[in-house]
Structures are given as structure tokens and as C-alpha cells.
Length: 312
View 1 (cartoon, helix red, strand yellow):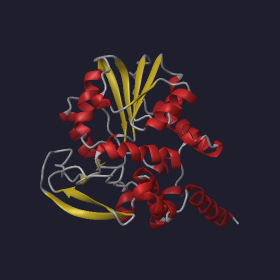
View 2: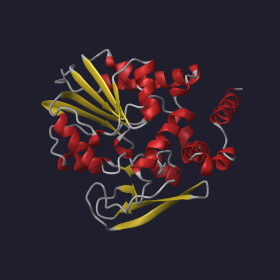
View 3: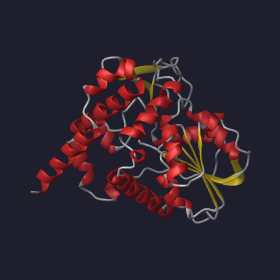
């Protein structure tokens, strides 16, 4: 059974001065609200689902749409994504970075990114909330991955040269606490690398409620650049570079197409979210609801069909 956490203060500035922006309904049973902090402009989910239930949700996340299925097409898709991210990482490294010792990838998922970049480091390691993903990373990929959350683990302090949060910080109920824990695990000259969605991006401004990042079952905090800098400074990080990138750097047409199709794309994402939620609820509550949601294969079949139509 799912339960909601208590109402949050702003995860960036701790203000309680807020205004409701969007409400999302899942399967007719889960209702989540995204609010705007009127002090710093950060958007955040007011009362997320409790972390204990979210661990079941993340198991369903990777089982329904992830490499743990051992589906070759899905693994290929995730592998290509990991390869692109590795190139982005290498292209944006500061000139002075020469720390290729111990690397910790927080929220490493199924471990494909860890495997792809692990060859660059002497001691690559990951930690992942989803038990099925952590098992896939260790048993299938042979990576060193712990099951759990960074806040509850007992890594040795000052032991890592690099800690990465690849699209992870937005999932944390308390992102500042997560970064404070990470700061203690870094060596004195260690580095942290963070990627997350940009609340002030052009696509979000145009897409509004249908921005693909607005998935409050899993994304709990939506940072803009100034908010991210504020969090880093409050956690005693220094000498950092914060910048906004965009998919226009890859191909100028892709973002435009996604914006024009924002609602349709969001509906596909929402359908997957409901399927994951139904599976996490289990047979007693979710079996009937799961039957009412399109399965992953149907969703991707529809997506491929529309793509082929565009190219005919």
C-alpha cells in the first residue's frame, strides 16, 4: 500500500511560501501536486509517495521499460544512451580534471552507464534503489553495485575521486541532504558531476504542464540554473561550473518536433507511469488497473508506426 510523505518545504531554500501550479492524477487513486516556491522559483512535489513504496515503483520502472527484461532491443537502446552520455561527459570535463581512481555513480539504474564509463576508472562503483536493477548490474553486467540509497549506506568518508548524479538529483526527497552526504564521501580534491532537467528551458516554457520532465511519481524537484547553484553553495561545494545545455546541440529539428508533439509524448510517458504504478501496487490493488494501461510493447509499436509515417 502506498502512503504520502509529509508536506515538504522548498528543497532549495526551505521556504514554505508556495503556490500550486499543476495537479496530476494516476489510475484514479494517486494525486500529486507540483508547487512553485515563491521565494526562489523552484518547482517541487509537495507530498511525494513515501520512499519505501518508491523502491517498489523503481523495480517496476526497470522491469517494464528497462534492460532487466534482458530484451535485446531495450538493452541496445539503453547502451546507445549510455554511449552518448559518456561522450558528453568527456567533452565537458574541465581541463584540470585528472581523477580516474574511485568513481561512485549514484542511482546507477541497470548499470549500463557504469559499465560504459567504468573502463576509464580504476574502481567504478554504483548504488541503486531498485533491487532488480542492482541485481542485473551485478549478476549480468558484472559491475560492483550496492542496493540502497546513498544516505543510508556506510561508504568510507573521503574515498571517491568522482561522484556522479546522472539525472538523479530530481528523484531525491531531500536533495540537499543527498549532496551533503556526497560531499563527505569525496576526497579533498574530488569532483561531483550533476545532470538534471532545466525548469527554465525553452521546451518547458513552451510545453507547460506537458513538459516531459513533469513526472511527479519519480521527479520530485525541478531545478533552474540559479536554484542548482544555490543548492551547491549551501552544501559547501566550490570551484564549480554550472551551465545549461540543450538538445539543439545535437540536432536542431528534434526539440521542435518534441515541443509540437509535447502532449502526445507526455501521454505516452504518463501511460508508462501508470503501468509502473499499477505493478508496484501489486495484485491486490493494481492488477485490474494494470490491465487498463497499455503495455510497453504497444506504446513503442505506436511510436515506431508514427515515425515511419513521418518518413514515408
